[in-house]
Length: 381
View 1 (tube, one colour):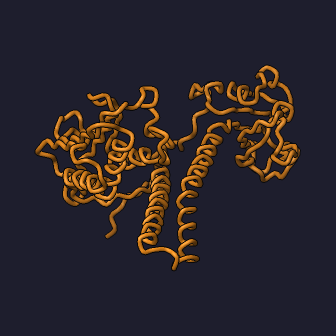
View 2 (spheres, rainbow, N blue to C red):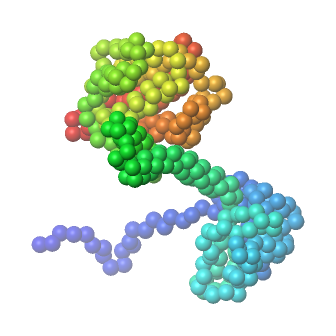
View 3 (cartoon, helix red, strand yellow):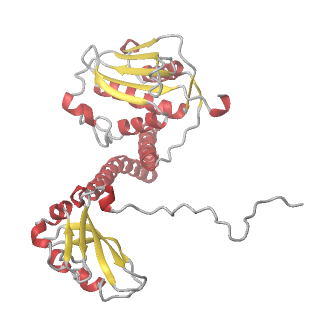
């Protein structure tokens, strides 16, 4: 026997809920002048019936002058080859299956670039155009991005040129005149080549990190990290390289919560912060490691995070520069570097779910502090 539901003939069926529909501008209470992008609407005759404030700002055409006029006169757009855009696209007389124009760069009188897209509104499919809706966007944000990319390319080219020139020069000299040099001279040249190759490798690694951070593809391999031991290794490396041991002061407040993080990325953060303190700071470099509250769980006050503070006794960072410390290309001084290190540090810390801040140390120097949450892997929760 099959058990189910049925309706007797003639019995009323349950009414279906009406299909959702988009609310119109009047229902939403939106004034076209409140839109962030330029909006231009033309009627079925090609006359402008809407020209919002953003469109007036972008085109430098007053709305009262554009309203009622022809669309091609209000927006005398040309493509990058100097052709009149409305004649090319022909929204009212073109193919009846067209629904609009994709966004593209066009030129206003005077050569100003704007991003333009258009939508053709028809009363029925393949019917005549009832409205032409045009969206205008300023290209300033895109130009800033392009300038940033151009600056990055210029800096990278400059940073690569010096070590590659050195590598090429020494290797060519050794190949051409190997027998003329003593073993000590050969060793010195090869050590220089090795150091310059390391410099190129570091720069390429920085570029890859920036690409992953900007695209959200920076991956973490979390493991238990002994942050105190990690800092100790960096200090020992500096001492072995010739820095006086008494220049570093490491203070650890126990007990510290178990920290799960990517050890390679944590090493990268520590390396950048300590290098900045040693290179640009003066006096004692102090590293404080303390338990802290997680940036996400401050309300419960539990020590669910670890904070590391690196400070020095140098001149510090000027107040007007503190809001730019973690941006691309910021340099604390003119003494070399790409200015990408702290930008990468901020990206790594934030991918871990942590925070990083900059301030003035008690001794007057720079103080950078980052906090990493415990963030144990899910399978241990």
